[in-house]
Length: 438
Image (tube, rainbow, N blue to C red; front, side, top):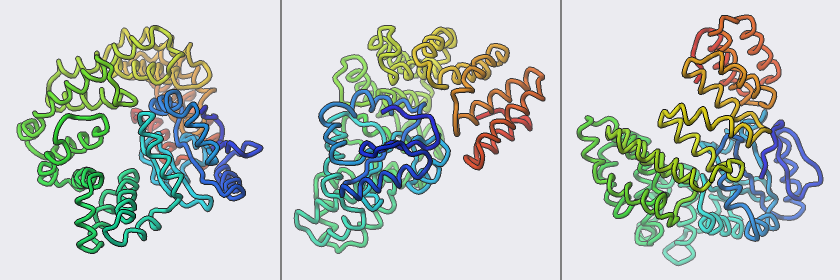
């Protein structure tokens, strides 16, 4: 699905015309009401690497055609003017996020993040089939029978995807004791409950609870879908003395090594976008102070991407962007400088790589080289990313002692932007006052 870089452009598959602005969802809902069909909203952005993985590897073929037949599908570009209304309403915390609504606009499910193909459709089909809101699902949990347990599993999964970890636990606590016991004894629910508890404990900074949950959440080999939990655990333990943190996390080193070997070297699958795995390992080794292991993890990710791309950067944007990311995080500026022109050539129609190259050069203090790339990206930028480009253009112009031009760039970007993205506008104004862009 190609994201259209215009004002919140949502393209209903079964609508006869494109709609600009937030009214695109309204048009999709009108179509859904006429067909008595659900609405599938793909929330993404042009810089979202995992979105490209899903586009190329998952949302294709007969299975995706069946989704398009079942539902009205629309795209929401999170960078486009007007998108904030929906991002806030749905509490979107990352891309991609897939929101599924009934014909009346009520959320009936969501999928947060990338998935392997089989897992994505295994999760999506039941949501489309049952068409029930979260409150409707909760109302069906009335006892210990199979139907109640199936509804309970769906409730817990929905709250997990919505990142409402406390809400899931608090709801469970309201149920009669026999129902709670049946849910805790259910194989699927019992695997999810400790994960919800850990994520809640991390959010609330309860390091003792986080440590207590380690054996339940990570009982054996590590899998890619536990990345959020491992990251939350590391955050949760950050209040402890460094030695205590590292002692608690030490058992994860061989588990991470085995997972990387299986996915990146043996290529046995089980993961979707491999950047999540590489980042999981890199973050862990960084926290553990293991510089050699950190470099090895990033190198393994880069080799995996390069071997699959074979120099054909336009063939897979997810892999190409992952390669860029690994080189950047590893600080390999020579390789990065050689790669960026190839990415700009491979993806000439959007602002992303000219902007990223200019930003990278500016962060290294090479302002004269940075400016032409930032200027190259500016005409292709829009919405929120127009303001990001303006931030770095203004910053570089100030560094080159061209303050009048910096103010003109910022003024023009804010004028075109209008009332949208006030937080990003504030950041742009701060750059004019001497702050380094984020």
